[in-house]
Structure formats: structure tokens, C-alpha cells
Length: 245
Ligand SMILES: Nc1ncnc2c1ncn2[C@@H]1O[C@H](COP(=O)(O)OP(=O)(O)OP(=O)(O)O)[C@@H](O)[C@H]1O
Ligand SMILES: [Mg+2]
Ligand SMILES: [Zn+2]
Image (cartoon, rainbow, N blue to C red; front, side, top):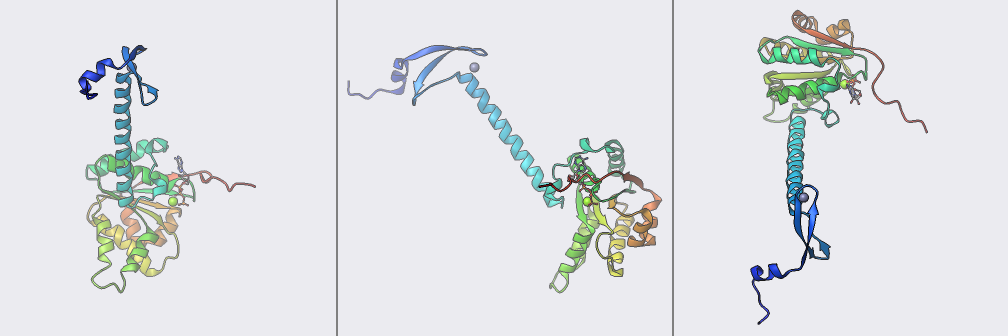
């Protein structure tokens, strides 16, 4: 004996005990690295399960990245239609939108009633269904427009057109912030251009219909009113009250 043995020769000589797995029956258990080995088939199952969980996590990560890319704020990345009372009406509206119906879905309600949550859940559902949806807010849109001013080679159109072209657009916070006449025009143009392209839009505001009309202009309002589904969210703000100390 020179002390060199092949693994095949060595293995059978390793001492083991026979253990019993409730699920898989008897198996040889070895003392290895200071521990007693368990059921190999259970270990295989666990490996497969871990791999599956890893794949699910990866998939979720990819989806979250996609939601972010289309403008959905991370805070609302987990919004799901199952939590929304009006889910059925929204799914029906989205089905029609996908089939080529171009009317708007108008969601109105006081601050904190869940409008953005609802809209992001709708966008998520639409994306899951294979629609190319985008989300933006009026303040974000106007800010991105302003950021193009004075930048060589970049036009307002670079901000405007992708939103016109999106298969579905969620336009949140209509009426938020100051609304100069130019801003009204820009928002009006976005809505009217989508209307002309026969593309469905979800419009969200905490204004009353009349206030909304003033903010987006009569012509855009008239286009929206022609063929829209309206959802009014009522009740108290769903935001948690400030913690008392
Ligand atoms: N259906 C829901 N299930 C669970 N949480 C919700 C639901 N709707 C809203 N929330 C939560 O309540 C809070 C307020 O909702 P959200 O931001 O959608 O209100 P909002 O109407 O858009 O308010 P604002 O007019 O100020 O923009 C958020 O934290 C949101 O995640
Ligand atoms: Mg909101
Ligand atoms: Zn086992």
C-alpha cells in the first residue's frame, strides 16, 4: 500500500449508518466535514426548490425593472388590481382598449383615495397582458419638457412623442401644481394627440370634472368626455396618519 487509493476504492470503505427518511426511505448517512449527511433526495428537492425560488426572484426583479423603465414609481411597483375594488370595470376597460377602443378612463377622487395605486395596478396588469404601457405625471412631463430647453439637438418632441405613441398611457396628477397657459396647452396637446391617434389613456386627477375642464382646456375635455369611463374614488385618505409620539 502506498497510501494512494482511488475514490471508487475509498468510498465503500467509508463507515456509514443507515438512516430512514420519512419521505424517501432508507439512505446511507456519512460523517462528513464534522456533520452527518442527510437524505440525498431531500437535498436534491431542496436544491430544486431553491433554484425555483431564485428564478421567481429573478423574474420579479426583471419585472420591477421594467415597471420602473416605463415610469411607474417604485412605491407603486407592487400595486395589484386584486386589491382594487373597481378591478372588474378596469379589466373590462383594458380589454376594450386592447381591442382598439380609444376612449379614456378618468379616475377622480380626493387626495390619498388610491388613484395612483389604482392606475399603477392597471398599468401593471396591462403590461402583464402584453400591452406597452407608460406612466407619467403632468408635473414630471412638464419638467422633462423644460429640461430640453436649451439642450442642443434635443427637442420637446423627444419627450412628447413617446407618450403619444405608447399603446396605453397613464397620465397622473392632472391639475397638480401651477398651471400656466402654456402648460395647459402642452397637456391639451398630449391628450389631443393621443385622441387623434386613437390611443387609450388613463387620466387621473383630484379635481372635480369642471376644474379638470379648466385645467386641460375645453377641447381636450370635450374629446375625453365623448367616450370615457369614469371612476370616482371616495372616502378618507388611505395614507397612514402621522405617528403620534
Ligand atoms: N387598494 C389599495 N390597497 C392597498 N393600499 C392602497 C390601495 N389604494 C391606495 N393604497 C395606498 O394608500 C396610499 C395612498 O394612495 P395613492 O397614492 O394611490 O392616493 P392618490 O389618490 O393617488 O393620492 P394623491 O391625490 O395625493 O396623489 C398609498 O400608500 C397607496 O399605496
Ligand atoms: Mg396620486
Ligand atoms: Zn428524503
